[in-house]
Length: 340
Image 1: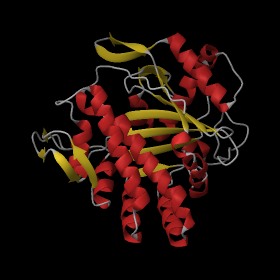
Image 2: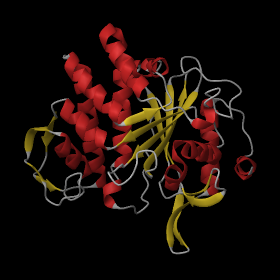
Image 3: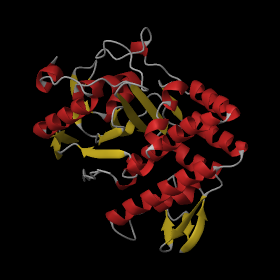
């Protein structure tokens, strides 16, 4: 398997660093259940109902369901497609549709070789917001114009169509782990950490083999006090593996029901059940699935006393070329496209 892992430090607040990993894990679990549950009639109907209830079409695509950058609607069973994953740190003070996006990941899927490319978009990236025609942080696109502005802004930035989106509320992570009755982890050291409400020293985890509930699992992957960033990344992979194994080994239909309900409450998408089930072929490759993780290079800067992450134009254009090649799209002048 060819896999490139690139990491970037944008000096963001500490509690936000785990968001990118959470959205990836929740999305994988959701798609895994959606594609594998189709083998049992009841579970297929249950999953279809959950996905149908999570439907929120893009307002700008209500007539034909396709990106303006496509000549016809794509079919993930036969076409190369792209998905924008958004993680929303929703609170009682903000609506789900108007919260800022704390994580944005654009993924492209090549149907021919069953490979995936994923690029993390730093939330403070200074870009031109669609419809507002002004430079601002990309995280504000969702806050100002909801999912439509977020999708259109990403399309303009990369000059490629965004075919689907999946928007996840981070509250789902805790609830899904709890719905699975926790996950078993061999904890390497005692941990005292804040909880999801940022209450200090609320979580206490003992060293050794433990069954962690949702809050404890979140604290385990968030903590930065006890080891390195590299080790924290390994903990995240460990928890993700435990979650995936637990989701595959669920024997009770009731448990599937609980997990799917939590996913349904905290996820919206314009992808239908049949389209999501098409990703079973990617999951079937398992460890042989080729995944390339890309990064957007840039520099932190302050403009009018506001912090931004200013993208490197040459590196951005290289990323655009890589994504276009993966989607097998014709190369265009990225600068001209972004100006139009």
